[in-house]
Length: 429
Ligand code: SF4
Ligand code: SF4
Image (tube, rainbow, N blue to C red; front, side, top):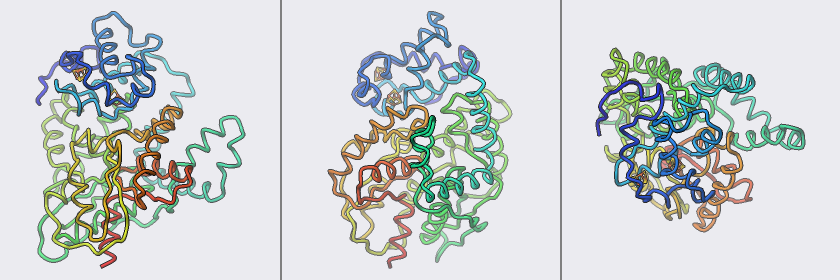
């Protein structure tokens, strides 16, 4: 649906009134909202949050009013309410607008400002620094630093962060500039490496390129690309996100490819919305829309293309947890299940509440640790009921969160990205 262009929003960066007015207060979204289920508070439901945004829009509530930011930041931005909504409310855009408005209206403490500067400006856009951090995190985990610091003040928070560090050591080897298609060429794509993916899951990026190549796709891996800005958008920092978007568009738009491939659901949803992010920039809007039109999740692209190479057999019971930004943000539901069923030997079991957030939600597990833990516990319970050996997902944040939950539960099940699983199956041939 095309949104007519107004000013950036009615209140600077705030939620767009036209999107707010689509809500008819029917409440059909309420049973799908994880924070409403946990807290049972109307203002922590999509409908309640929209009402608060409307109050701000109408001047009945200040954007820095006590309590408003709490309801807005307790939202996971999981967008399950968008899937449920019959009126086409695009809740992700609303809550992200509300956060940007809050950040402009409310002075944060010097410490919070310093942390934001460090994370959003000094780390995420700089892959070499993130790579060092990923290696330090892995080393700290191996040395069990989390156990040592947990009893100290602030140590619990650091220990929880280290719990999320993947067991697999980050790869230091850069990907090749291109991976040639096997056999007849069926497509030509550019791989978006991401920031966290590139630093901590470079092996998954390589697996993605190899799986595509095995299916007749030539994969370019452009060196000139940066963080997509998704975490900035979710945290109310759209100005920085726009700058990253412009850099990515300028670096990648001239490539002669069928698609920009992304294997992290959160990044994919954001890359597909560059047109929205830059809607008020006359020099970039059209370029952003063109760019977004070419973005595809690797799963989506591969399922549309169809497997030309048959994977080898894997003897495993497998379940799949939908990343919110793939399911609700990009409406990709059937494709991952079809690819899993295409692997010989795999016994696929549907996961209860697979469409519910695992509590990772960008940096939600850091900013709202208690709610995040409750959601993770609920997810792990569902996984246990499947009896699966492997839990498949398609987003680095979900992968880290689910793995941490299963480890803490003493579960023998492991978590794997769908592209890694496919590569493993091809390796088994
Ligand atoms: S967001 Fe959609 S589903 Fe929820 S109350 Fe509004 S119109 Fe109904
Ligand atoms: S985005 Fe998720 S947590 Fe936020 S209101 Fe919608 S369903 Fe609830």
